[in-house]
Image 1 (tube, rainbow, N blue to C red):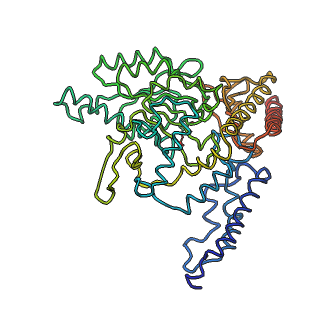
Image 2: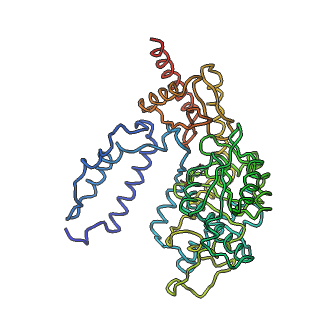
Image 3: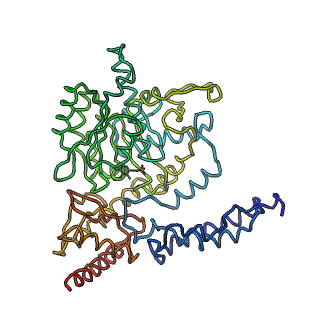
Length: 486
Ligand SMILES: *Cc1c(COP(=O)(O)O)cnc(C)c1O
């Protein structure tokens, strides 16, 4: 076999069509597969050779191995029996756009590196920002000082905002105290977030090398405003420099919402950068009935959510807006000659490499463009509303069964519930659920209690799946309580 015979355009056409059929079959029949794999760690190594092949192999053999090697080890996130974590988006238009992204295969680090890649991204972030009714300052337009960028994940958006805030704080302090060294200032900086914030927030502070303090929450798991104020006052009195606060809209354990309209003014008064992490819940703000939860965003310096969670966009696509793009760009600008081009940064010319950690970036805005146009705002709102209604349906099933309790307000597509009783009892229930592989859930901890999280995930989840899931949970509960009585 010579290299000339390795998949030419004619074979690509044939195999591509086969792959589309494979994908559609996979997703249409996904319910027939166990949602969670039954394997031991290391299962895969024994199924494939220990070395890469020296001679080219046959495509049919590769596809056969997808079923033999890969599929048995897949957790099927797009199965309507999957209720774990938070959803990850999936839709056919997004997958098609991703295919085109692969074909163009540009690396859009600067405007000149592929103008369409940069310009579509800026405009799509404006479209999406307008769908959310973000304040004008976050919209790029042609002359805006703010604007949006696609990051890979919420974790990166949080880290970027923290690093930009850190840089801004150091410069601010040095402005009135030029004798202070950067090292000196960094050791005095203090950041804040909720004790319910995602672990990626604390991780950002570890990577950024700054102290971060956890603000206590109330009985609804939202930050207590007076506690943030008190901590800031105490830290200032102790000679520390408060500089960054990350609020959460839709916390990971229970989907709680920090009161940003109260917290924002404190941050603004104290020169504290307010970042808002709305990774999951942000998508729902396209619906007018959920938009009030975003009131107070006008106080934020940066805001982020993941269309790749709940807006039908396949991973990865985390959209971030900043009030002042100069804060990001100014923090990390590097301009070697080989990356320079004639059209320098303006409202129209953006070099997105300054807005993110890596240099390279994919043409991810294609996914947004395809999905926004195929669904329209109405279609996207219908998706959110349907999933919230399914969560409410599950909530009412739980509430109707006196053996169970609901552990947090059900605002969006997440229901936190548990059996009334010990943590051990609930751990045993979850073990049975996981072992049965009929549905898949993960737990969380709320006020010291072991709680089950039931998140509406797959795009194709329907009422029948909710009813089936509940029947299954109550059956396992019955067995568990029976055995407990012996
Ligand atoms: C899921 C989630 C994250 C992490 O998202 P990545 O995009 O995987 O980094 C961060 N914060 C919240 C509130 C989340 O729900």
